Image 1 (cartoon, rainbow over the protein chains, first blue to last red):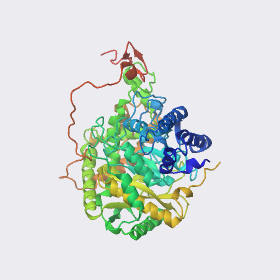
Image 2: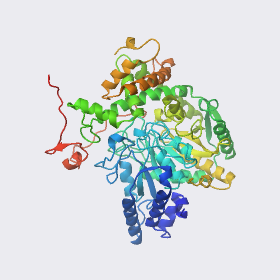
Image 3: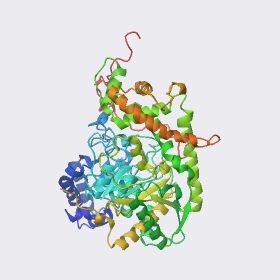
Length: 501
Length: 107
């Protein structure tokens, strides 16, 4: 494995911008790595080698002409989740219904990455339409966890997280509707951030549940995630829910956090998100992380969020309701698959959707149609929206008592592929701790918190902050990361095993 | 569909799932119906927990971030060309989407 693939994005950018390494060399090293391991990991659905090298060559040309780099990440390779549109690569969303689809426009996130000179290596695997927690619901086969190829990498953004853990890319983009960035980060020992709702444009993000979807940065270190966060965030007139406010200064916050002083900060442990139901090693690592945070000077307090226990139920009514409406656009008429079975448009539509959607997507469409039916609306969708209000109020009350809240990111480490694929409710339980943040539109991140003693698999510490409170969250995440690395004697990424043959 | 049509034992029946699939334009198979009906019954049993929360006077939240209508100046901006808009179409003719018959014989 080339040493270039072991570097952080910040280190690699420094070498590229100082002309020690060319952007083309950096791209090629990662493309070689993909060629060597991705047959086993299956993080990518599409690799755009030619376009990646051409983009990198432009960065080199520009640097040769003594033009300052377009961004702090110019020339650094990245893996893009296949839910964001790209004009030069297919966008399938892990679904047969969009197999081979070439979007006529770039997502705003894609456009921002291109403008920043970031080298887009390819598109990563995901649960179909971002519905799932294991990447097993991809129509193109599961992604394997680089820590143990028989295990799931989390989902829906398992491809992006696995690409990082397999050293196929130092940066990736994910999207998080109920935990699809943070839970895969925890499963693969990487860092993942769900920004404040509206912090990153949803233009060109193929919708799952519009009131919950949010794209965000994935990386192997907190600083790298911060650098990427500043590249993709910001107001976008093309997304009417985009927040028209300055992007929080997360890079500065991550650098400050790494200095390791959290005096004056209060960290709230959410009582309802610990204890029972968490795997022993997950809980042990969480307790150890709390001790580290205290050593850094933070005051650890316990807070209660009594309605979080209803978050999962509210989410699995609100999300399917939005899904059933959003996915009505796949009608076999304007783009995507058409199965010419039947004489009428309606028959063609039903046959196409039957052939093009997988089981989890169908389940959620049917569930959402049910929850929105007259006679059930008030008891299900309407009531879930009220619970959503109460969860937001729980957050508001908790943030009166603490600057950030913490919990384990996921209740268990990565489970074996195939374990929960036929038990939807068991699969949903993976997102217990991540869902409240999406319902409230606040921000949260997952930082590796070690490996579980019983199975040697990584665990994650979730740090949650108020809307637009990313700076304090990155500061705490970076401080914890630095303390953890100092205790271990090396960065966490060095503990990731080589992908098995 | 009304609340009375659900069976006494479970939250949802196989017939209801078939009806919902038709409404959703999903030509599901009998085998799928067998599996989905059981799974959806379990899921609905779990999500029905939202009913335990006393929330009568609580306003619903449809969006986490307060939204207001966003206006922009009424000026021409570049959009997709006709060719781009049709580039992913399963069938196109004369610069338009070509679709199967929309109305049935009797209509």
